[in-house]
Image (cartoon, rainbow, N blue to C red; front, side, top):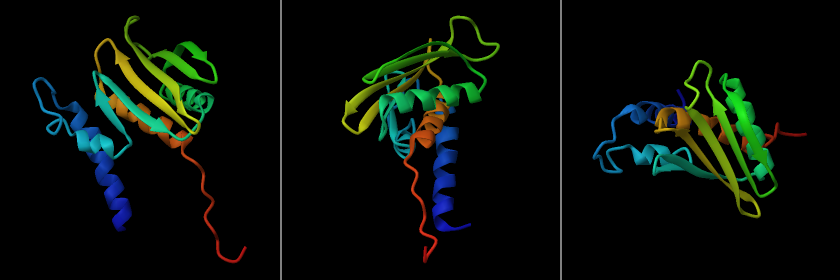
Length: 148
């Protein structure tokens, strides 16, 4: 395996394994905070927060696609140029359990994204949804095929 692929695989493994650990009375370091920094987001007060280099409407569309891909039903979607809030329920879930994705313009070329599960928090689920949104909003860079 090439060095870069190994690092990415290791980061994904950490992001998937560490969220399952109990955080009762734990310090940020023991929660694997650094592993979440690798995916461009941090956990605070039961919510995952991070920034993406996309407009609010693009982030909202990416969040909707990601949630639908996972089988969630979108109960509510309020989207403007400045902010967005999507509320979704997973199939077979309890009626009061939901995932909320909020997006708010941070500046001209950045949007602050927040992913949470209510009530409570599921770090693995939130991190996975974040990675999906982040991947769908990442800028596409065409590789030079040499000589075109």
